[in-house]
Image (cartoon, rainbow, N blue to C red):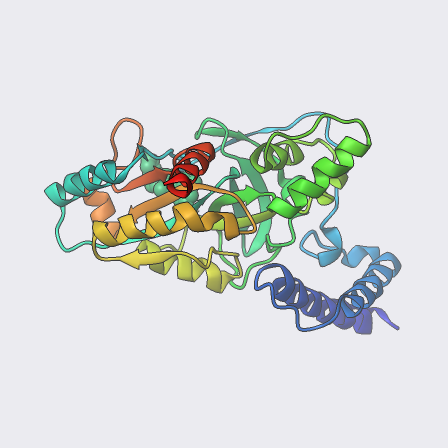
Length: 326
Ligand SMILES: CC(C)(CNC(=O)c1ccc(Oc2ccccc2)cc1)c1ccc2c(N)nc(N)nc2n1
């Protein structure tokens, strides 16, 4: 095969593998069996070995790249990654709604499951993943790009040649957490206390080959810096992120009243054990960006968003026992 043919073949294999990876890890709906993916990947690996000058960092072969680091570089978040105020019950949610209603009218809420993982930022330049970082203290995080590249649901190339910074939650699915602790117990290693610690521990590994084995996943939920950004609501922003090829959470809903929001939190308080990942609450946001700007921020948190936190698990078990004993 000459260089001309090799370039074409490499490009078409990359597009094919990106599509297969997207179907499997983002849509959870593979269109080809694993052995087809593996065969095409090995074909691409062989071609890139034959023509190393054609290797690009967004190639599907570059997922587990990079040598182990001796430390993490610092990253400054131009747009800070803010934290949320908490609500611990329906009265707190009604208070939140009253504060919103004092400043805006004719508003609606978006409710998202609050994934119990690690907040991260993903930077893309001209549509290519160039840097990933932890939230850190909200203004300064750690550069964990090589580890994040190993997460298959993070696209190395998005569907628009945009320069955009996306935020989300990296997490370890419950099954992967149990399997990992099983293996660590067999090897006499210290166990992780919960999936959140296991995800954090995996992403703070200096060797990406270890992170690559931890079967981490991600849901994206917001945008930081964005050159082309001009979207009027949070729900539209989430739809756009999905269109770009990111994994967004399918349980997100929009409601017109805080009563509907309260019902949604009650549903998930009991339903969360059915999920393949842990959640520690529900995030509620005023949907309109204009209304978010009218509401602004307190010293610490946006006034237009709040995190409803579930009561501690054992509390649910105790209540359950009480109900059963009645
Ligand atoms: C709402 C926000 C706090 C993100 N938003 C921001 O971080 C943010 C940051 C600067 C903003 O505007 C500024 C720009 C420049 C300077 C100061 C503020 C606006 C929002 C947040 C935090 C945690 C979340 C979580 N765990 N799960 C979900 N599903 N959503 C979440 N959403």
